[in-house]
Length: 446
Image (cartoon, rainbow, N blue to C red):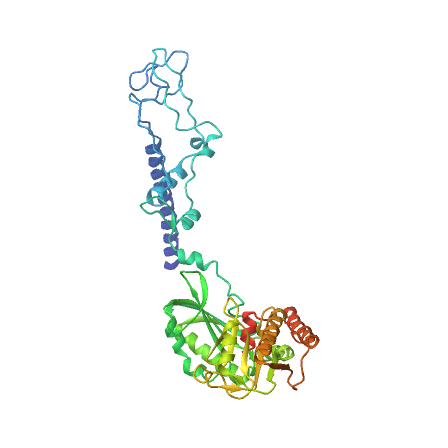
């Protein structure tokens, strides 16, 4: 035989001997452990010749084991499962015991003839009882319990409250960002970043885009999505940025879309964020929405012209303010609803706009009441209110209501305008899922 063969034989023999020795050692260790666990703390009454530990005599008629001590033990406190080393030792000890030991039961001893008190309840009940004992916490349970900590007050709280909230994300309301009318980019940040830093990052690049860009951040305190302002003090981990696809200037162009997407990629790299950018047919979607908008984009006007003498600016202002209209910086008197949304407005029929400085000396030969159909909720009702106000103005200023061709307007014509040019377009908008006066409609028709 060669030296290699002899060496291999020697190594194999050594390995076999080592395995046998290791098994013997393990057997010896487990035997010692079992003896330590099962070692009785008092003399076995079955083998002790009729006298139990502590000097008590067992009645002749019964030779059953008795679990008693001379003094009554203190009440046992309830032990909660503990996650730690002690638990692991307990689990290991249980695993070393035989199946017959796990079901070992001791019956209680009846009271002795000498009037001694009844024995304490046994530690183990008979057959069905083990199901009532608390089970050791398994490794799977430990993994779940490790997320819980117990404060000094005794109540359990979630150790990672933010992660629990993250598991239940809050959807962005369509009133703030609607995927039908905006190209929405979603970003999830690893660490919170100040909102001001986010807004200023790509500001110069996004100024070249000819469509509005809407910024939303998730407020961790209120659990709500908010529009981001330049002075916001929020620190964000969730961000939504929407490029509006259509407004009254038309649909978004391919150049604007390219600028926006490049800016979002740069922002995501800067924030080390994961960005979700939809890859759908954006330009086709914008063209479709623009065609819909063109069909319902109407502005209804009622003209009031003088019969001879011009209207005084001070009298116009008095009538407008009495009707709840407010003069704005846009040169219009506007009436708002309870939620601050514009209902209709009043402008000068001539080229000069109204202003707080000029209205006192201004005179004009005509006024125009305007209703923006897609931006007003319940347009037919608002149109009737505007028509009644125009009639009052005409009576007070001695004017005449006419259409754009300066033809007189009758009540029948006003009713026709209400049904055909307000009621029907708004019904079309509702069927499209973009009701007139909704936040989405006000963004589209801006």
